[in-house]
Length: 322
Image (cartoon, rainbow, N blue to C red):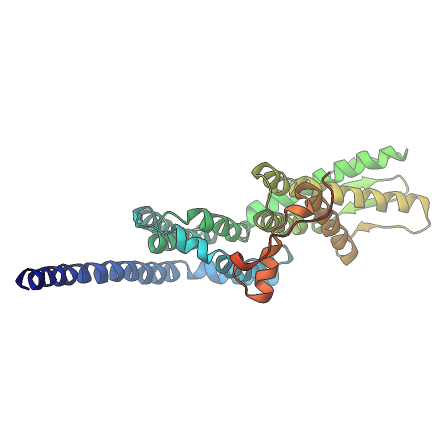
């Protein structure tokens, strides 16, 4: 009896010794999370306001609202995996938070919205590592990359990229026009067809299609079950496909202008049919790269029914492999 009672007292003493440590650990994590979020919001509030403004007023970045709404959905889908991979290695997250906070301060002092926005996303990633450890980093990292893809380009860089894409689309369009045997002369972004000229406007650079298509390609690569090299090809092909479609559209307008009485003094990119054609071609290419049978349809099934992944049947497509 004495020995048993002594053993229980010793066990109770050990539990009493462990309890404050556990509470202290939880309190330390909570303090880091609250202080980090508060600090990064205070230092990067101008960058967050700029991010919201450009998402709402610039067509090139309107997809940001959709991407941000999808991140919690993807995280909820991977939540069992996050809990299973959680560990106690949390110091890399603390180091990432410290670096991100320093970047946020430098961005605020230099009035760089891009640095503030990147620092905010890195802070969120670091906080996730502080809470769950380094185990689920493979779940958090793609979501952080998706958020980084929604950050608008600086105005100077956006102007440079727009001009480069504008000239490149014009040159490729010129080569396509020559294939139809039509004499053409190009000076900058102006296509001279002899009797009249076509001007490729800034909106025709393809940037407003390139950025959303890149984000959509990344989301598709995240959802599809396919080898890594297929996913890389899918994301990397967003730029050339956008440029080729844009150049082909310019060439078609030029050919129609020379073969019909209707003249097009300026190439317009505001048509919804042009944008729809770009997205349709992109979807066909995504299907070809990854195959329909590799799509993780369990994601859609679980979203609709809320059933656990282990209870869902394994789906196989009946489409033959290419």
